[in-house]
View 1 (cartoon, helix red, strand yellow):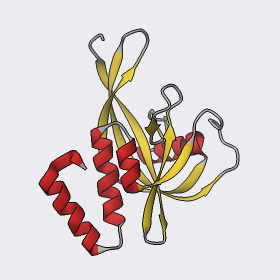
View 2 (cartoon, rainbow, N blue to C red):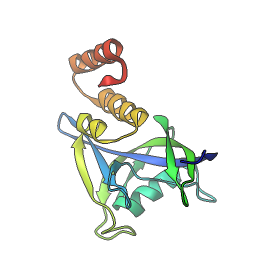
View 3 (cartoon, one colour):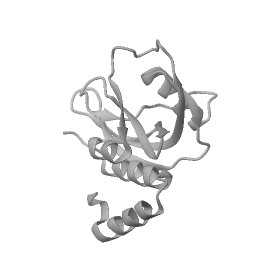
View 4 (cartoon, one colour):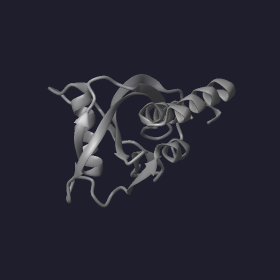
Length: 162
C-alpha cells in the first residue's frame, strides 16, 4: 500500500430512533465492500456540515429527520483511491433523529439498510472510534440510569473493548 495523501474531511449522519425503551441505530452497507457503515459524504458548497450529512442520509438511505447542530464525535479511516493509493479521511458525525423514510431515493438498490439496537450497531462497524461514538451516543439516550452507570463503569474498566 502506498503512503496516504492529504487528509480529507467528510460529514456523516448517525441515524437513530427511540423504540420504547430501546435506542436503535440505522446502518447501511457500503457500495463496494458491503460492510456496515453510516451515511457520509464530502462537503457540499453552500451547505453547513450538518446539512451535508443530512443530504447524504437522504441520498444513501432515504431517511429524513432532525439533524443535530453539533457533532457527537469524529473518526478517521483510510479511503481506497485509484490503484494502491489511500487517503486519510476525518469524518465528523452528526446525530440524525429519523422521522420518516421516503419510498424512492438516489442510491436505492445500491445499499442495504437495517435498524439495530445501538450496542449491536457498534459491534458491526469496523472503525474503533465509530464503535465508541455509537456506544456512547446510544448509552446517553438509554432511559435506565443503572444501564448508564454500568456502561460508564464497563468503559472505564475495559476501555474500548466493548
